[in-house]
Image 1 (tube, rainbow, N blue to C red):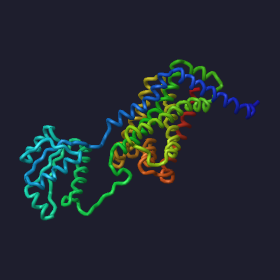
Image 2 (image 1 turned 120 degrees about the vertical axis):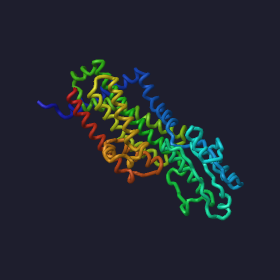
Image 3 (image 1 turned 45 degrees about the horizontal axis):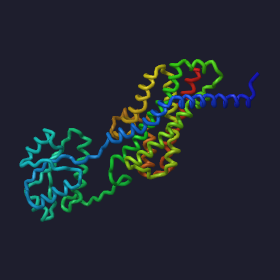
Image 4 (image 1 turned 30 degrees about the vertical axis):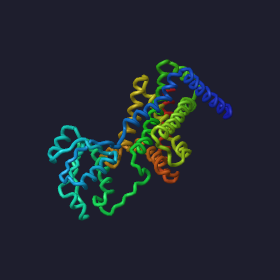
Length: 371
């Protein structure tokens, strides 16, 4: 005889409450794990935030002044007064500057040709030679961009009639670009790590067998397991946002409530993926390795966080469509830097929601076989 719907519903709610309560008790009784869960996001943000920087400051420069006039001295002073470049050596020939760059004593050579003062007075536009250490192509590109910007401000060293305006990040601080990306990295790692360790710990302790023998449904088990860690991840999200604003001076330009609401599907995606991983492994060590491999590495390399997706090979670009953080980066950078609204971010939000639905479904199917 089938069970009445009301009684079945009440039993499902009791099962959900039991699993959730059990998980909360476990977290409270293990303050070390709770402290680590709350401290890791801040630690990772501070570590990556200070270690990763695309800004270039006080680049050591060697000067080759073949003009030796007041105009060349004024230009050199304005060049080094920017704070981007620091004069560390002088040379009489361009070859000497090359030797200094080869020896690592400077990273750029500034060559002011003879006749520089005459060209400036004639308003014909003077040319300045640059020798840039290209061993690090990313740094070299930034140094060139800074140099072009400085020269564009000089009356007779402009790059033409172009007057660029930088939108959304006018100061061009790389921190404004990196901190929202770090938010995606940290949250992806935490949402995958916490539920995977929670379930695998039950397997190692043998308590999963009690759940198999009980009447708990997979849906109640999933929600009961994810709810406590979801709340921890929400707290981590708020903490990372506050630390980013206070420590790195990267406030949210758009709506914080919109950022919070649009982060929930991404958190659900990570939690479901962590739970799905736990159904395949029986060791905490393996769970940690898989959590790292499926969160930090794809988010760093394949999401567009550091490396532009458009510059990747075509095959790798196709792979990036399977990385949820790719779409979350569009959301958080849109809100952080552009003050974008729901209309502009609806497409990536919808894709993240599909990811969450698919992974939750896969986790339910796997847990039905496990339980």
